[in-house]
Length: 287
Image 1 (cartoon, helix red, strand yellow):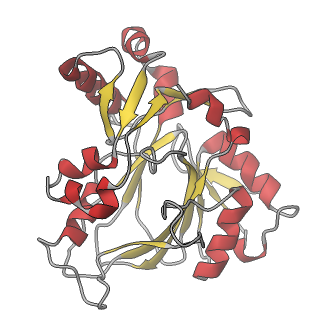
Image 2 (cartoon, rainbow, N blue to C red; image 1 turned 180 degrees about the horizontal axis):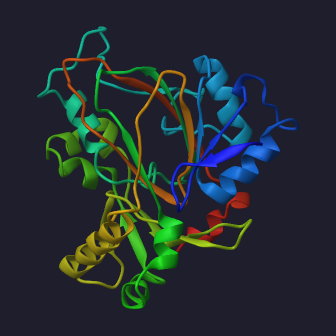
Protein backbone atom coordinates (compact mmCIF):
# COMPACT_ATOMS: atom_id res chain seq x y z
CA UNK A 1 0.00 0.00 0.00
CA UNK A 2 1.31 3.43 -0.91
CA UNK A 3 2.03 5.50 2.20
CA UNK A 4 3.87 8.66 3.22
CA UNK A 5 5.29 9.67 6.63
CA UNK A 6 3.35 11.75 9.13
CA UNK A 7 6.40 12.30 11.34
CA UNK A 8 10.08 11.41 11.17
CA UNK A 9 9.73 8.94 14.06
CA UNK A 10 6.38 7.25 13.43
CA UNK A 11 3.05 7.36 11.64
CA UNK A 12 2.04 7.18 7.98
CA UNK A 13 -0.80 8.33 5.78
CA UNK A 14 -2.09 5.38 3.78
CA UNK A 15 -3.25 6.34 0.29
CA UNK A 16 -5.96 5.09 -2.04
CA UNK A 17 -7.65 2.72 0.40
CA UNK A 18 -11.41 2.49 0.92
CA UNK A 19 -11.83 1.09 4.42
CA UNK A 20 -15.41 0.03 3.63
CA UNK A 21 -14.20 -2.83 1.42
CA UNK A 22 -11.28 -4.09 3.51
CA UNK A 23 -11.64 -7.71 4.61
CA UNK A 24 -9.58 -10.06 6.74
CA UNK A 25 -8.00 -11.54 3.60
CA UNK A 26 -7.95 -8.50 1.32
CA UNK A 27 -6.29 -5.34 2.59
CA UNK A 28 -6.21 -6.03 6.30
CA UNK A 29 -2.91 -7.97 6.30
CA UNK A 30 -1.18 -5.02 4.61
CA UNK A 31 -2.81 -2.53 7.01
CA UNK A 32 -1.82 -4.67 10.00
CA UNK A 33 1.80 -4.78 8.82
CA UNK A 34 1.87 -0.97 8.51
CA UNK A 35 0.25 -0.68 11.94
CA UNK A 36 2.88 -2.90 13.58
CA UNK A 37 5.68 -0.87 12.01
CA UNK A 38 4.40 2.72 12.17
CA UNK A 39 1.88 2.78 15.10
CA UNK A 40 -0.37 5.55 13.70
CA UNK A 41 -2.22 5.18 10.39
CA UNK A 42 -4.17 8.02 8.74
CA UNK A 43 -6.77 7.35 6.04
CA UNK A 44 -8.28 10.42 4.38
CA UNK A 45 -11.47 10.88 2.36
CA UNK A 46 -13.30 7.96 3.97
CA UNK A 47 -17.09 7.65 4.14
CA UNK A 48 -17.42 5.11 6.96
CA UNK A 49 -20.77 4.74 8.67
CA UNK A 50 -20.59 3.84 12.36
CA UNK A 51 -21.45 0.21 11.51
CA UNK A 52 -18.64 0.13 8.95
CA UNK A 53 -16.26 1.63 11.49
CA UNK A 54 -17.14 -1.20 13.86
CA UNK A 55 -16.45 -3.79 11.14
CA UNK A 56 -13.00 -2.33 10.49
CA UNK A 57 -12.24 -2.36 14.22
CA UNK A 58 -13.31 -6.00 14.52
CA UNK A 59 -10.61 -7.01 12.05
CA UNK A 60 -8.11 -6.16 14.80
CA UNK A 61 -9.93 -8.10 17.53
CA UNK A 62 -12.84 -7.92 19.99
CA UNK A 63 -14.49 -4.56 20.62
CA UNK A 64 -13.79 -3.28 24.10
CA UNK A 65 -16.47 -4.01 26.70
CA UNK A 66 -16.96 -1.37 29.42
CA UNK A 67 -20.29 -2.78 30.58
CA UNK A 68 -18.70 -4.99 33.29
CA UNK A 69 -20.87 -7.79 31.96
CA UNK A 70 -24.15 -5.95 32.53
CA UNK A 71 -26.87 -7.07 30.12
CA UNK A 72 -24.46 -8.65 27.66
CA UNK A 73 -22.10 -6.81 25.35
CA UNK A 74 -22.81 -5.21 22.00
CA UNK A 75 -20.26 -2.97 20.25
CA UNK A 76 -20.88 0.56 21.49
CA UNK A 77 -19.46 3.61 19.74
CA UNK A 78 -17.96 6.27 21.97
CA UNK A 79 -18.56 9.84 20.84
CA UNK A 80 -15.75 12.23 21.75
CA UNK A 81 -18.03 15.21 21.49
CA UNK A 82 -19.28 18.36 23.21
CA UNK A 83 -22.76 17.63 21.84
CA UNK A 84 -24.86 16.51 24.81
CA UNK A 85 -27.60 13.87 24.92
CA UNK A 86 -30.24 16.47 24.09
CA UNK A 87 -28.43 17.59 20.93
CA UNK A 88 -27.23 20.88 22.42
CA UNK A 89 -23.72 21.95 23.34
CA UNK A 90 -22.38 20.99 26.75
CA UNK A 91 -21.97 23.84 29.23
CA UNK A 92 -18.36 24.78 29.90
CA UNK A 93 -18.74 23.92 33.61
CA UNK A 94 -20.48 20.60 32.99
CA UNK A 95 -18.97 17.23 33.87
CA UNK A 96 -19.49 16.29 30.22
CA UNK A 97 -17.06 18.97 29.09
CA UNK A 98 -14.65 18.29 31.95
CA UNK A 99 -14.48 14.69 30.79
CA UNK A 100 -13.38 15.97 27.37
CA UNK A 101 -10.81 18.22 29.03
CA UNK A 102 -9.37 15.19 30.84
CA UNK A 103 -8.70 13.70 27.41
CA UNK A 104 -6.36 16.65 26.84
CA UNK A 105 -3.87 15.02 29.24
CA UNK A 106 -1.28 12.75 27.63
CA UNK A 107 -2.73 9.27 27.94
CA UNK A 108 -3.12 5.77 26.60
CA UNK A 109 -6.71 4.53 26.42
CA UNK A 110 -8.02 1.82 28.73
CA UNK A 111 -4.97 1.19 30.92
CA UNK A 112 -7.45 1.27 33.82
CA UNK A 113 -9.38 -1.74 32.48
CA UNK A 114 -8.74 -5.38 33.45
CA UNK A 115 -7.59 -5.92 29.86
CA UNK A 116 -6.19 -2.86 28.06
CA UNK A 117 -6.68 -1.74 24.48
CA UNK A 118 -4.78 -2.70 21.34
CA UNK A 119 -6.13 0.05 19.08
CA UNK A 120 -8.39 3.03 18.86
CA UNK A 121 -10.05 3.81 15.55
CA UNK A 122 -11.44 7.35 15.39
CA UNK A 123 -13.36 9.09 12.61
CA UNK A 124 -14.13 12.81 12.20
CA UNK A 125 -17.90 13.43 12.25
CA UNK A 126 -18.37 17.13 13.13
CA UNK A 127 -15.53 19.66 13.22
CA UNK A 128 -15.16 23.20 14.61
CA UNK A 129 -13.69 26.14 12.73
CA UNK A 130 -10.39 25.79 14.61
CA UNK A 131 -8.64 23.70 17.26
CA UNK A 132 -9.65 20.20 18.31
CA UNK A 133 -6.43 18.61 17.07
CA UNK A 134 -5.31 15.20 18.30
CA UNK A 135 -1.62 14.91 19.14
CA UNK A 136 0.45 11.72 19.18
CA UNK A 137 3.91 10.60 20.22
CA UNK A 138 5.67 7.27 19.80
CA UNK A 139 6.53 5.63 23.11
CA UNK A 140 8.54 3.06 21.17
CA UNK A 141 10.78 5.83 19.88
CA UNK A 142 10.85 7.35 23.38
CA UNK A 143 12.07 4.09 24.92
CA UNK A 144 14.69 3.65 22.21
CA UNK A 145 16.04 7.20 22.59
CA UNK A 146 15.70 7.53 26.37
CA UNK A 147 18.81 8.57 28.32
CA UNK A 148 20.34 5.49 30.03
CA UNK A 149 19.86 6.79 33.58
CA UNK A 150 16.14 7.47 33.09
CA UNK A 151 15.66 4.21 31.22
CA UNK A 152 17.31 2.28 34.03
CA UNK A 153 14.95 3.87 36.56
CA UNK A 154 11.90 2.81 34.52
CA UNK A 155 13.02 -0.64 33.35
CA UNK A 156 11.17 -3.46 35.08
CA UNK A 157 8.92 -1.13 37.04
CA UNK A 158 5.21 -1.80 37.56
CA UNK A 159 2.82 1.15 37.22
CA UNK A 160 -0.56 1.31 38.91
CA UNK A 161 -3.35 2.84 36.80
CA UNK A 162 -6.70 4.31 37.81
CA UNK A 163 -9.36 6.05 35.73
CA UNK A 164 -9.98 8.38 38.67
CA UNK A 165 -6.35 9.52 38.72
CA UNK A 166 -6.55 11.34 35.41
CA UNK A 167 -10.02 12.71 36.09
CA UNK A 168 -9.20 14.18 39.50
CA UNK A 169 -6.46 16.22 37.82
CA UNK A 170 -9.29 18.15 36.12
CA UNK A 171 -11.88 18.13 38.92
CA UNK A 172 -12.07 15.92 42.06
CA UNK A 173 -15.83 15.66 41.55
CA UNK A 174 -15.30 14.18 38.09
CA UNK A 175 -13.35 11.31 39.63
CA UNK A 176 -16.41 10.41 41.74
CA UNK A 177 -18.71 9.89 38.74
CA UNK A 178 -20.04 6.32 38.67
CA UNK A 179 -18.63 5.64 35.20
CA UNK A 180 -15.18 6.58 36.53
CA UNK A 181 -15.23 5.17 40.06
CA UNK A 182 -16.59 1.73 39.03
CA UNK A 183 -13.15 0.51 37.91
CA UNK A 184 -10.57 -1.08 40.21
CA UNK A 185 -6.90 -0.16 40.07
CA UNK A 186 -4.84 -2.07 37.51
CA UNK A 187 -1.10 -2.81 37.40
CA UNK A 188 0.98 -3.04 34.20
CA UNK A 189 4.67 -3.25 33.47
CA UNK A 190 6.44 -0.12 32.27
CA UNK A 191 7.06 -1.53 28.78
CA UNK A 192 5.10 -3.47 26.19
CA UNK A 193 7.00 -5.72 23.77
CA UNK A 194 5.70 -5.89 20.21
CA UNK A 195 5.47 -9.63 19.38
CA UNK A 196 6.09 -9.00 15.67
CA UNK A 197 9.22 -6.86 15.86
CA UNK A 198 10.42 -7.58 19.40
CA UNK A 199 10.68 -3.82 20.04
CA UNK A 200 9.75 -2.43 23.44
CA UNK A 201 7.61 0.66 24.02
CA UNK A 202 7.12 2.68 27.18
CA UNK A 203 3.64 1.90 28.51
CA UNK A 204 2.39 4.82 30.55
CA UNK A 205 -0.54 7.22 30.88
CA UNK A 206 -1.98 10.08 32.89
CA UNK A 207 -3.92 7.30 34.68
CA UNK A 208 -0.76 6.22 36.58
CA UNK A 209 -0.95 7.02 40.31
CA UNK A 210 1.80 4.87 41.83
CA UNK A 211 4.96 2.90 41.03
CA UNK A 212 5.64 -0.39 42.81
CA UNK A 213 8.56 -0.18 45.19
CA UNK A 214 8.82 3.61 45.17
CA UNK A 215 7.67 6.26 47.60
CA UNK A 216 4.63 8.14 46.22
CA UNK A 217 6.48 11.40 45.55
CA UNK A 218 9.42 9.65 43.90
CA UNK A 219 7.18 7.39 41.84
CA UNK A 220 5.11 10.24 40.46
CA UNK A 221 8.27 12.24 39.76
CA UNK A 222 9.48 9.33 37.64
CA UNK A 223 6.15 9.13 35.80
CA UNK A 224 6.25 12.87 35.10
CA UNK A 225 9.84 12.65 33.85
CA UNK A 226 9.00 9.77 31.50
CA UNK A 227 5.98 11.53 30.00
CA UNK A 228 7.94 14.75 29.68
CA UNK A 229 10.71 12.97 27.81
CA UNK A 230 8.30 11.08 25.54
CA UNK A 231 6.46 14.31 24.62
CA UNK A 232 9.46 16.63 24.31
CA UNK A 233 9.78 19.13 21.47
CA UNK A 234 10.19 17.51 18.09
CA UNK A 235 8.49 14.23 19.00
CA UNK A 236 4.82 15.24 18.58
CA UNK A 237 2.62 14.72 15.53
CA UNK A 238 -0.34 17.13 15.75
CA UNK A 239 -3.25 16.08 13.54
CA UNK A 240 -5.60 18.73 12.23
CA UNK A 241 -8.77 16.78 11.47
CA UNK A 242 -10.61 16.99 8.16
CA UNK A 243 -14.00 15.47 7.48
CA UNK A 244 -13.42 12.00 6.08
CA UNK A 245 -10.34 11.38 8.22
CA UNK A 246 -9.98 8.05 10.01
CA UNK A 247 -7.01 7.34 12.28
CA UNK A 248 -6.05 3.96 13.72
CA UNK A 249 -3.39 4.01 16.41
CA UNK A 250 -1.50 1.47 18.47
CA UNK A 251 -2.32 1.86 22.16
CA UNK A 252 0.70 -0.29 23.05
CA UNK A 253 3.21 2.15 21.57
CA UNK A 254 1.80 5.69 21.64
CA UNK A 255 0.56 8.45 23.87
CA UNK A 256 -2.08 10.88 22.62
CA UNK A 257 -4.11 13.85 23.76
CA UNK A 258 -6.88 16.07 22.42
CA UNK A 259 -6.58 19.82 22.12
CA UNK A 260 -9.10 22.52 23.01
CA UNK A 261 -11.43 24.20 20.52
CA UNK A 262 -14.08 26.95 20.74
CA UNK A 263 -16.64 25.21 22.95
CA UNK A 264 -19.49 27.23 21.48
CA UNK A 265 -18.90 25.15 18.33
CA UNK A 266 -19.68 21.44 17.92
CA UNK A 267 -16.89 18.92 17.53
CA UNK A 268 -17.45 15.16 17.40
CA UNK A 269 -15.27 12.14 16.72
CA UNK A 270 -16.59 8.58 16.76
CA UNK A 271 -14.11 6.42 18.63
CA UNK A 272 -13.83 2.69 19.20
CA UNK A 273 -11.24 0.64 21.10
CA UNK A 274 -10.32 -2.99 20.50
CA UNK A 275 -9.15 -5.13 23.40
CA UNK A 276 -5.62 -6.53 23.30
CA UNK A 277 -5.09 -10.30 23.24
CA UNK A 278 -2.20 -12.66 23.96
CA UNK A 279 -1.27 -12.56 20.26
CA UNK A 280 -0.77 -8.79 20.64
CA UNK A 281 1.89 -9.24 23.33
CA UNK A 282 -0.41 -8.86 26.33
CA UNK A 283 1.67 -11.26 28.44
CA UNK A 284 4.68 -8.95 28.12
CA UNK A 285 2.93 -6.17 30.04
CA UNK A 286 1.39 -8.29 32.78
CA UNK A 287 3.23 -8.04 36.14
